[in-house]
Image (cartoon, rainbow, N blue to C red; front, side, top):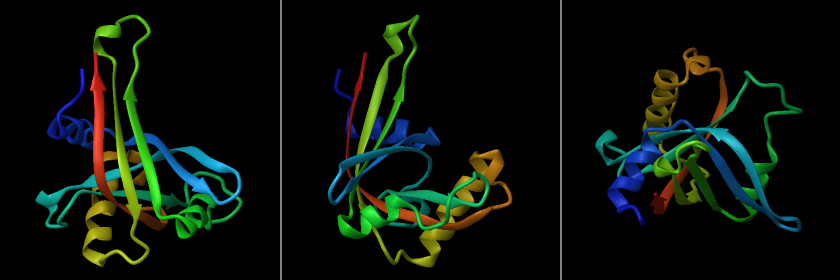
Length: 145
């Protein structure tokens, strides 16, 4: 069953983990698991926005990630969030958000997203971010059993 826009956005807002897909200029789609926060219109930020941290917690080769280079070349992305239970298929669902990268987001929006991450992800309580990728939610679609 197709989810309404409001139901899809609500499910997106109640999660903190999903799969971000960006497009590499030569290799094509590049999905990667990410933590994220959602700031909606009720946060004074206009349309919904997703904040994806480039953190200092998990090991990396650097803080300039391929997903950032991909978004600079093509600002489109998708975030897929889902619930899967192999024992009970009646509760299956997924939501896909179509995104557009904002290379220079307003500081208040970055702060709202950082606050949300600090509240919802225990490892991010001290805000160990190098920076946040900010993407505007252009559309959502979803399905539920």
